[in-house]
Picture (cartoon, rainbow, N blue to C red):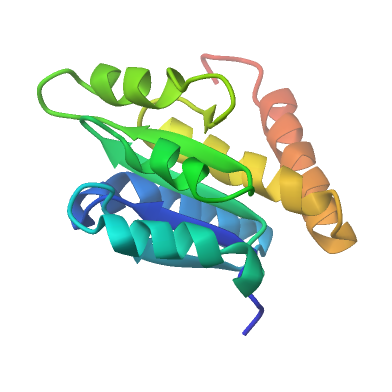
Length: 163
């Protein structure tokens, strides 16, 4: 089993419905990752420990999914120098707008890369994480290129919307 280079964390088990798409994308690209439920509100010490020790464990990028108040990505970023990508999980009350605004409105000096709400955001976070890992990993870089080439070919081969 390869050493995980991406950490995929989420605030609760219910966030897995969204975050599983990040993991499936990392699987498709052959990028090793670890997953864990880490709540900024219910387990703040665990969150600080996870973020603070991630680099030492070989993690290069953290993808943090959270809904509602969505403090997990920002609080994770406050405890690590690693890039943190925040995935807003769709909430019941505000359809994820609360999550998006909580993640994207970080104060200057504590950046969190923020992606779209829900499934698309989880997939894009995985692609961004793979791009970061690919800076130093030729094999991931080649798999990412192949992934994008396949996307391009799929569109070019299916340009007739009626067909």
